[in-house]
Image 1 (cartoon, rainbow, N blue to C red):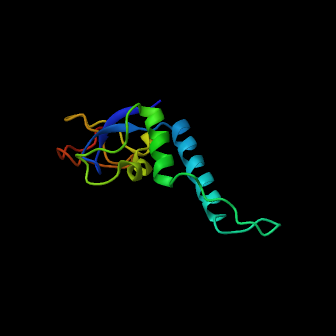
Image 2 (tube, one colour):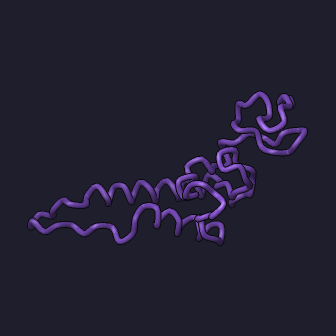
Image 3 (tube, one colour):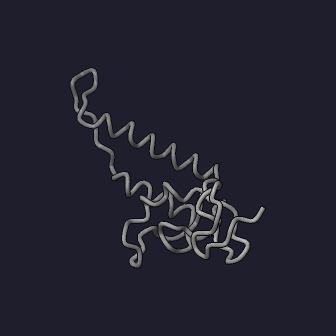
Length: 121
């Protein structure tokens, strides 16, 4: 289940995907790419195969909205958040900082990038 945590790239709190959600997201992207690569190719009878009905961005945006309950386009963000989903993976961020509470950037981070506090433990 998604968990709202601070994202260093987005510089705000965003829903982070757990491993089950991440696996569903990656499968969705991989399926889309596989189908997209078929675009322009032809079947055994020489008929052109259909193009995907939606762009990858639209497919990812719909998936993300189904998980978090709101659209992924944020007018305050300088890029389309659907691309940011690639780094909104709960297992890749570190534990919360003992001082400020923001998550460390990675599992291996030795200090908090926000306040500079060394990693506890």
